[in-house]
Image 1: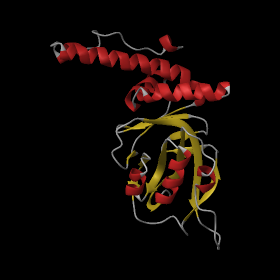
Image 2: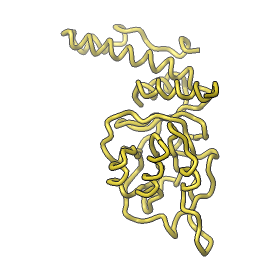
Image 3: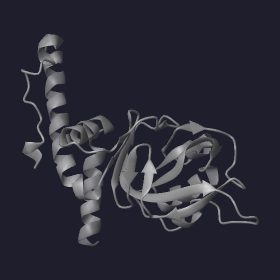
Length: 228
């Protein structure tokens, strides 16, 4: 295992111990983009999905004749802990992820799939325990409609610019991306945010009034300076 691979594995493990809310709060505090709205889990996976971003850029099919199916070149060489992220520009009239891709991705150990657009075959994704986050599920096939324009290139997911090698966390709350170069700061701050929330929850359970507990003066404010 290389140092970079080992580092990424450690970062992914730390992400999985958090949730997207803590990461979003850390990004907010640091003034960084990353949280994406409108993406939701397509089936009720209870665990946190986190991993290293692998990107696919989709485009409408323009040329006649057969083409390689979208995302298959990436899935064929994906690594465990990879998260496939497909930029289909938010389109929800056609799917760009389905059951056969899910079967292959699960075989490769892919941690999850995020589609800025629509997917289909949700039951097949659930059957192979592959978390999928998208804007919608539709029955319409990508064949003859959507092709892969590129892979492992910068893409846009909602308002967030996403690069291959970035980190991502997704759960029932939503999706948040963290730029590769910012992951150390974001993780350190998010872990402090999570610890603060836990202390506040314990205070409520002990009988303290929630008005007092949630007042800004009662718990130390998490600041960006402390994570610099």
